[in-house]
Length: 284
Image (cartoon, rainbow, N blue to C red; front, side):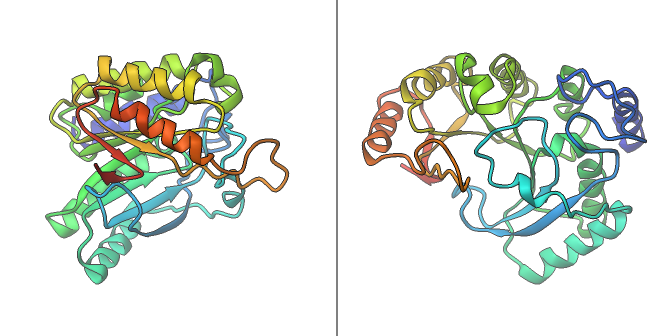
């Protein structure tokens, strides 16, 4: 698929929105969907991140507004309200190209959220423009919650759409805890399906799966997720993250993972049989 073909396919998905599993059916060219986002891309920051996985840093992170999940402990949602729309992918690509040339040693570019799949047309177009400007660009990652439709999955994972080189995705929780942790009852079913299909459709692309360990969710979520990863995506690198922090001023749970839970989670991955993994982004 070339640039125009992908734009055409995405316009169809946006017209009566089928980007994500929520059946809002809104014409995103004119209105905001259930995610709170219309067709105009909005970005609230970009910066060089040194705290991502050791294999992809320094990473130029581009944070896009909006999300189709409603995780109660999300630390970013409050930052989206004042974002102005970006009208021109070419001008933005030129700005990013200047940023890369100024900072040098950028190993990867991450389109991240919020949830970047909601505005993925802009991410794809900007990535193409970057290649036209720079010729050789850092590896371009889509860093997604993977809670999107099968239609979008097949566009993103097409070998003929090389604007997305690689994938970082989250697997937050299992089915019994999906509504509590993500606000979406069907989260686990959809996300595990999309992750598994993505690894089959793009077997030679780099894939990283992140799992943030949540207080009180080791036995119901962390251990089953590690077992699922070993069985269904054995060649994917898993990043076990023990850095949970509840930033809510009036949160009703623990602020951090306890030391005992952190050690238990690390023991779980060390004894899981998973071949390649990070702990908090670092090789073991």
